[in-house]
Image (cartoon, rainbow, N blue to C red; front, side):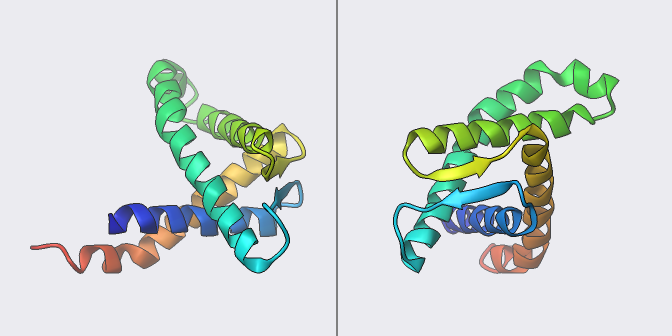
Length: 133
């Protein structure tokens, strides 16, 4: 349970970093206020996690030969498309991610992936602390 919550919070922070560093990505919160902004990031991160787990894994399995042919570069396109899908789904819900174009989505996915990787390295000792050896 702790891993799930930390994963969700890590995704939310990585999404915030994408919003902060990439000009073509913005977040529309539920309502005004800092608490609503944080809840919006966590909600979009949850939607991103579900879409990435279900649709992303399916695409990665089906497109495995293309991954091999392009030496993994098609992953940039797939991650950008998933980022755009998250933006579309959250906008249908009345809040969420706004991506100005496909290549902004690719750049946002790259920043989010790098942020998740870095945060994972930082948080790994805390996740492993309660596990038996």
